[in-house]
Image (cartoon, rainbow, N blue to C red; front, top):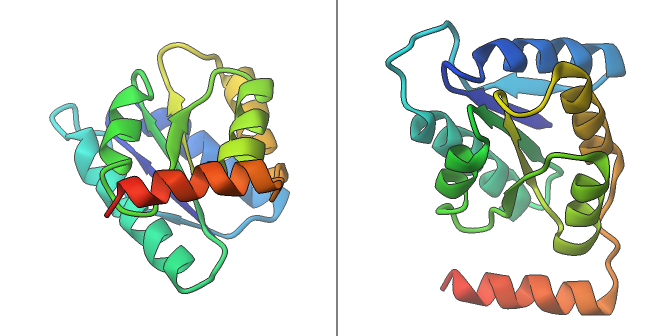
Length: 150
């Protein structure tokens, strides 16, 4: 399951991501915004997505999230406040591939303002296709991050 969320600056791109996910055969749930509202706040959507991803992963179910705001940074900061979440902003396919492979990134934060639609599509596709390596050194490091959450 892929959970999606975006504020007003990411709303238009989120709607495109939904179309791509449908085309690629991925199941998703839209956690808002459900309409454009220039006064909405990105932490609300980041929290909604992060809590759903964290809950499903705690139940040993596969789940990832995609969050979008103007910079991608705000939603990542907010999502990372939720225990179990490893959210990061990626601006290239290579960066997101390394982040999933090495850090087991479970929420992708996209910038609606600093990447174009084609770049976003390739980053999302790579995020969904890449798996955590499971290498001992990466497991050790992710476990150290988990220890910081206590």
